[in-house]
Length: 377
Image (cartoon, rainbow, N blue to C red):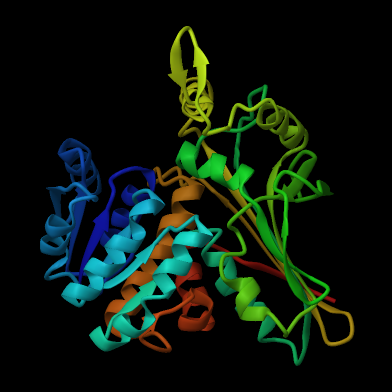
């Protein structure tokens, strides 16, 4: 199979690595980026049969030409391109998945279901970590119950060496981080879909060997799960894990307006606070240091029975793949290959929890040494 990866940042690099080094069915990989030198660096670093290309994701005609001849496409570029990229994939007959991150964009992609079915392809949004892998893990755990009452998902990327003031490092785009913190979270409460303000409902939680941690509401992590489980369960939510104290500090900056997209006048110039704040975060927060990814998926049902999945992944010192690259890019690579093989439950534009067979997906995770520890009571 021939796979195209759009974007040569951290996650694009991780996807190309997985396709070349963990995927015997992959014949060749193309990696494309607006900056050709970045794509060339990824190709040289990963090795194998990788071709670097230059592409402007906003140029539809060039995207259509690039997509041609590939069995699947993985988008690791900013989410606002994903609707036009999905349309291009349908036009040329290529399968498409992305790392998502915005519920409204996902709704537009899923509205392409009939076109995707007619073209005989899959369009599967939100295929990273969260949204992404955790949705399939929730389906995997839920299958163990006759009736499911609650699903609770907790996920975080943490530096191994946390530094003040935020005890956080940049492991994906600043735009994605800010969106996650300021947009509303969709949950199920009392059997109904509702919206909850992000950076609220802080709770404490523990993982063996870690200092005190907290989890709080953030946007996007539930993806399409509220719609999938509406009318079937009473409670569903997603919270982001950080070292204790992070939420209060960051929310103070949000409350001061630093994440606002409304221009203000400073020194007789229009300034967008969010753009300035994003630049400052990139300048002052560490990035690319050794990291952990923590995942907890807990399902409650059958009169109080609980099934819990924990993942503690860390940077692979041998390959240099960070935990965030492994748990975000590798799942997208797995899904791209499943689509290319026709190894999905249906064609069309479909949420991953409806299209991907959980047992096969989990087996692929474990083959990549992403280990799931299971608890039940």
